[in-house]
Length: 253
Image (cartoon, rainbow, N blue to C red):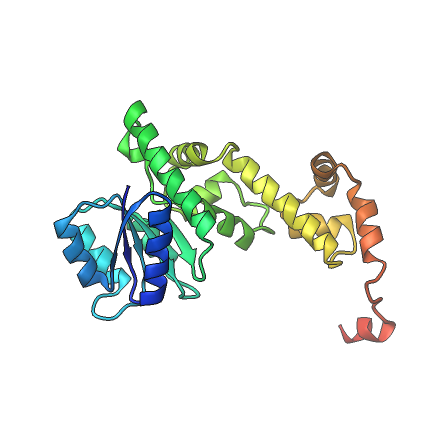
């Protein structure tokens, strides 16, 4: 596979190129967006790994130029920017966001998934409209950001990501072995367990509320089924070290 790394940091760019070449990919580099566009006029690339913050032409402008030229090469954004405008880039067709410093093994697996999916689409003739600009990580981020909202469901996620439920289901099923509904449930369960371990919870009702369940009894059953342990007993065991609230503190509150 042909990959182009566009990044102004020479050491980072060279390291990434050498790693990808070692994984069997034909990989070239460019120091900014303008240089990258020149490379793309000379050669066809299957994937671009694009930095955002670069001189001469940054990542955002590079994406605009590619959009105007109707270049449909897949793009993964790699950036050190703390809070990039993710939705802008997802709307432009970006497949994934990777933060520096990189986990090279994780990146390699994502690249493999992209190419495997492309092969599957070619064999099965999957319609283009099912290929949406959506990274699974963005769904997990959305779930965590709204985890206490009882209205968090598949409809909520599809609306936030500007896609239909049908496309959302299809995209997730191509990458994961679980449904969007199960993603939400599993993240809520794991987050609940984390809260217990951190000793931040005093009751089952409080825990259920923090992960978006009104019915604490129902959530308790889900928790027991998932982890094989009684949620209430677990909370009691982990909360004994919590500092009790004094009468004076209660009055102040």
